[in-house]
Image 1: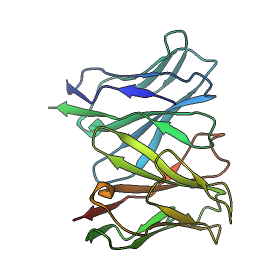
Image 2 (image 1 turned 30 degrees about the vertical axis):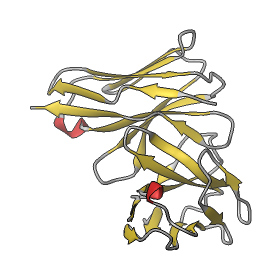
Image 3 (image 1 turned 90 degrees about the horizontal axis):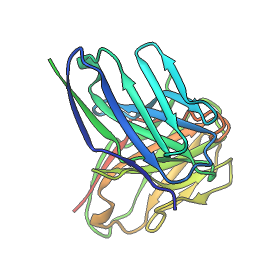
Image 4 (image 1 turned 30 degrees about the horizontal axis):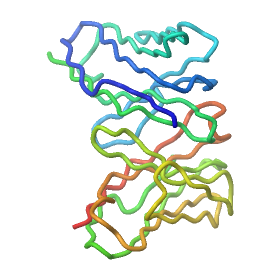
Length: 110
Length: 114
C-alpha cells in the first residue's frame, strides 16, 4: 500500500528557516500537498505542488519536489511563533481520497 | 460561514456502547470523508462517500459503519465501541474528490472508550 513518511518533531528558533521533509512510495499522485493543523483544530491546506513541477514558492513557503528520490519538502523562511503547528504532507493515491503522512510537529522557540 | 461541522465534539463511551458522529457541510460538496487521527500515525481514512447514497471503505473501516442519506450529511457509527477506537475523528469534504486537493476539515470529535 501507499506509504508516506515524515519525521515527528522539529524545533527551530524564531527567525530561522524550517525544513520539513516527506518521503513517499507511490509516485502516481497528480498533486502533492502540505496541510497545517493548529492546536485543537482541523487541518487546513497550506500549499500544493503539481507533480510535473520541481519547485513552488509562495511568500515564505517553498515546496521542493524530487520525483526521482520520491522526496517532498516544505521550507518556511523567517519562521514565526505562529508557525508552530503540525504539518502533514499528503497525496492522492488514486482512491479519491488523500493519504497523509504521520505529521511533523514544528516547535518555534522565541 | 459554517463549512464542515462535527457533532459531538467530545464523547466518552463504555466498551460495547454505540454512538453516531454527525458531519454536516454547507458547501454543496460531493465528496465526504471520515478520518481518524492517532498520535504518531497521522490521519487514516475510515470510510468515504463520492455522492449522496454512496459509501466506500477506506484504510481502516472495521468496527465502523457510515451512511450518506443526504448530500450535506455523512454519519459515522460505532455499533459496539472498543478501547482501540479511542481517537480524534475528523470529517472532511471536497468539491470534486481530489482534483484540486483541497479537503475542508471539521474541528474534530474526540472520542474516549473506557
